[in-house]
Image (cartoon, rainbow, N blue to C red; front, side, top):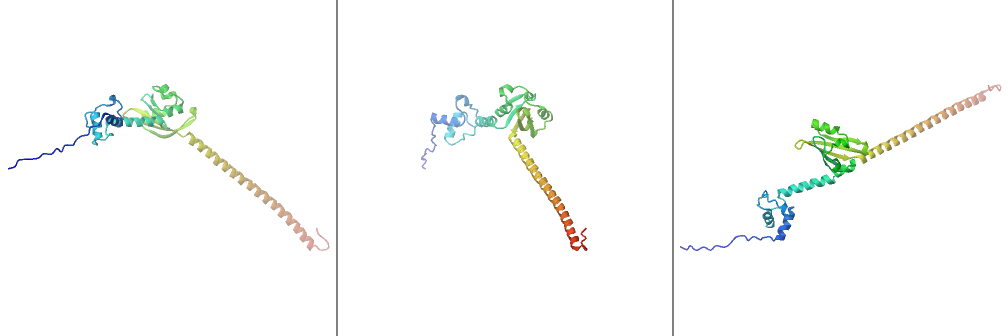
Length: 238
């Protein structure tokens, strides 16, 4: 019996990424220094560098990284908070300011560092915030006029139960309110102008009617007199 067997090497030869490529992949994962390489193992690899090598070999995805996704989410949240045109701030149970975005600084003319840790009542009335905190009922799209700041804001107050904080989002509708007032003024002026024309036309019609009445009466009197003259006998024209 022939027990001879030929074995062929079918192992897959791994291509090991050089240091430059590993560093590039790590940066794609949001890891710019050794401190960023947490080696948490949640992705299934013992170290971040092992994960980078797996990505290089096409066995893994750079986005499947818990710290990366968390940082990206927080980064996006920060961008929204910083650049939103809406007023956004957070209040704790004592109605003291925890966060205060740049739009809030512009509207209420105070820096975040000057209002953080202090009661919101320092700059605006806090009665609505107290109501939401007590009743745990959110307020949506309530129009508030802040005459001290010359603004009209559409106010939303949300109670976040788990964090026990109030999230306040306000939209600036000052421009729209001004336009609405101007539109109402234009409509009123147009209505007044139309009424003036109607009144003038009525006066003219009444004057014409009055003149026609007088003329008709005079004409009737004259024709009656002419009739009497035509029918008069013996020269009697009285």
